[in-house]
Image (cartoon, rainbow, N blue to C red; front, side):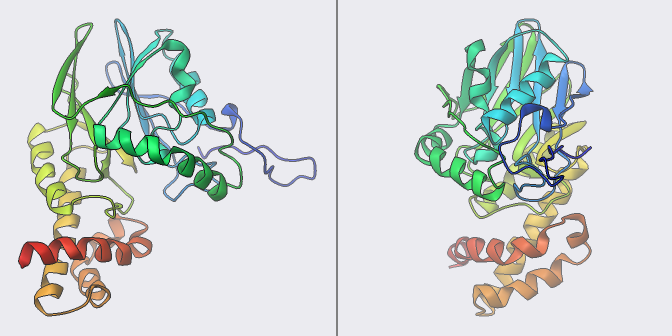
Length: 311
């Protein structure tokens, strides 16, 4: 179901801030005690999707709830909180913000009454502090005011190394990506349930955004994630899948890197390399909607890293 929109008195779509009930959020149990809240959107924040274009998840333990990402506005966080309340009355005691891009953490403030510990990578947390106002303004512009007012709630626990948490008998592994998708990325691995909460380290049926990351590190990281043999992967963007989503994404990123490398070795400029990468992607383009909107920027931002690696 798509996010709902209220109508104004004239019968058109209302242009003011969305209300929590305008977001058709429903928790889907993907393993015992593990729930995904999946957006139907496959595009950037807009009035149509009310700014909800990223997935979220939560884990219910005997001692409270761990939330993984909170959405791109405080109102969206309230909608998520209500979806959680449909499942459990347990307080939200922990929040993991996967990274600093605003569509994944600006909903934090909706949970402050529960006084949760908010975890993020230190590099991500620094950027959140510096960029919060810009993200709020950008989302309001893109959604024509739908995301409304947001009071940022910042991380208070930095996680820069792999940590194993015992949450009332539920084992939770918080894993940094090494800056694969963006500086300070975090993922959550649930070994008993074999579920990976991946954030934007994984895109399933949407072209990945690579402009803020380290593609070489990303490719290597996916080897480690594939070795986990997850049964369910909750991506930052796209549909729920199994481990096959990891191997497909690794192939995409490898083709991107190798195609640029071929262009560098042939003395082509970054823009001249785009057709080469497109050709090598072949049928894989169909698996990643939005490819054409992202490929030029993906090549331009990855080109310097490939060039440095070669020379």
